Length: 193
Image (tube, rainbow, N blue to C red; front, side):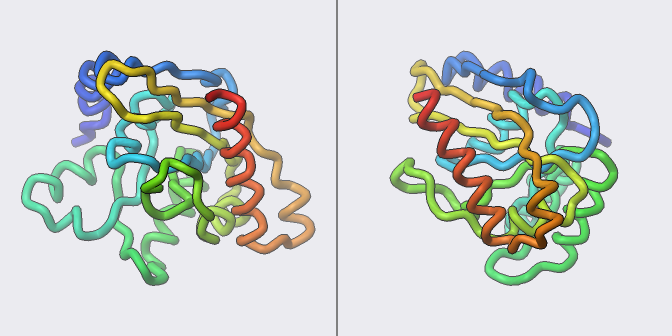
């Protein structure tokens, strides 16, 4: 049973007024086809915030431990989340991600791999570049501009899709492509503070 629409409705009714969320750039978001949505990561609540502000349903990798918790193990798969083993190469999660992208859906990813304690953008991991190159999908950079404080404005900014054709043709490394993506997220942060 897909609980995504219900989850989006419930999270929207709480999070929009609580953080006075302002969304910028949804017109940049492709209406169809596979999309790798790459976002900075500043708080645990980032996935639901991206989920409610994105014009299309988003699939997220979530750490495997969450799927072992009593309530979450039945909820997460029904809100488009799927498990990943952190700290190692998880082939099953890689296959799932490529399959979702190639089927024309949206995968949300936090290239830094973990939350930034300082709020500053960190170095991205090669996984984002790997999926950007192999996923037959466009990459949309996104910036969450906080801080998360009750009744203070939180911005979510969607950038224009990145054209990675040249990088694919030149067989650019996943690390370099991740750097390109992270630079686009940084630009969004700087332009919209």
